[in-house]
Image (tube, rainbow, N blue to C red):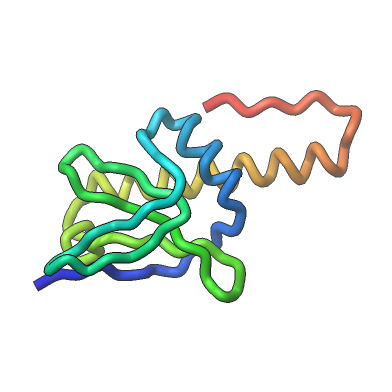
Amino acid sequence: MSHLSILPTVLRDADVLADTLSSLNLPWRRGGELVGFGGERQEVMLQLQLQDGQGLGWTRQSDGSLAVVGDLQRLSRNTALQRLLGRITRAYAARVALQDASLALPTASIELRV
């Protein structure tokens, strides 16, 4: 029996995550709930619908980080999902690094190409 799980991440900025999901052409939306086994519900800030119909979301933790929410037991067996989470995390990190560089070098021209 599987259920919705919350997995901490190092992601902190929901707007950067939303921009990242958009840049990867992923079908995301703000807010809502993920529904798990037996009607279990978890409110999320951002969510995306996976091709197999499962949902994946992010919720704000008390420390300010964003945690991944999903049926991690089922999702953990999905290597395509593992690669997708890696792509999202790398693209998010690149976007944050470029934002930081832009703040440190305000006259520089900085661009992110995915």
